[in-house]
Image 1 (tube, rainbow, N blue to C red):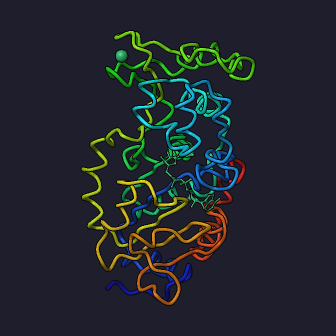
Image 2: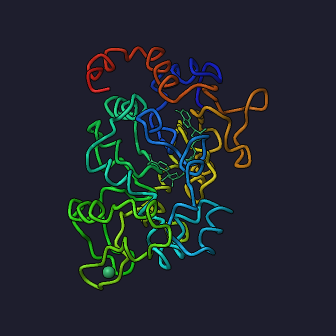
Image 3: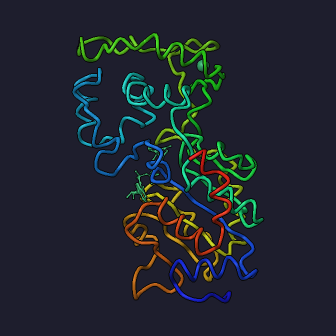
Length: 309
Ligand code: CNA
Ligand code: ZN
């Protein structure tokens, strides 16, 4: 067991400063970007909450599926049958990405600070918003577990389309058609593949029912070297990304930065049951990382980037 002071943020800071902690791995989720204004899936007011299946042009059976379980919007078989719900729900996200509407938060910057200190070995992000890269973090340290919205390809044949060309078509297709004509055919939103002509062009995000990028499986082998795993802003319900928490060695310290406890079914322990897990508490990711930054004495790093926050 590596030396550490206590199972709280001060203990994590002491461990990071001790020199004994050499390899930090991070798993982030949508909660890392809510501070930037991008809603997550599952929080109140998040995407699943605001989804209104009755406004999305689809067959009645498809609308019913979405009402029963909003995850259906990002299901592979749904997308192959009807591309409209996915494109409709993702539209603000796609166009917001093109307009660079969102800025990296302190949470994203913290990962870059870890890199500057030579501590970050890899960031596994489930996020598809690409905000991590705004900090200048080395792309080779980032694994986009669920792909990225900023690249576009055909789900059927893999042909790529330039992001800006795709956005031009997404914008041209916006006639708020679902508001004016709820019976409008789903084909009204189709963006056809330049190679195979099928209407399967979409951002390179991993649909439920598709396999994850192969590098995820290769790179998770590195987790055996982890001294500290930071889990930030994820409900840990999506597999296999959530398996990361069980892939670190038994003595690896795990810091959970999430406003609610998560991952108890995966063996994360809270309160008096905790032996190697630290929960930052019911505060936001940004507040937790600010606290950690103070404990680490890294305030100068924040001062340097304050104008970018
Ligand atoms: P999720 O299931 O929505 O869980 C988010 C978690 O973060 C919840 O436990 C929240 O309580 C917590 N949370 C929300 N805001 C904060 C905050 N400010 N501080 C601390 N905790 C907070 O999202 P997951 O990432 O676990 O689910 C995986 C999906 C969501 C992935 O496939 C993502 O691609 C997808 N997603 C990504 C984005 C994005 O790229 N920004 C946005 C929405 C969904
Ligand atoms: Zn194609």
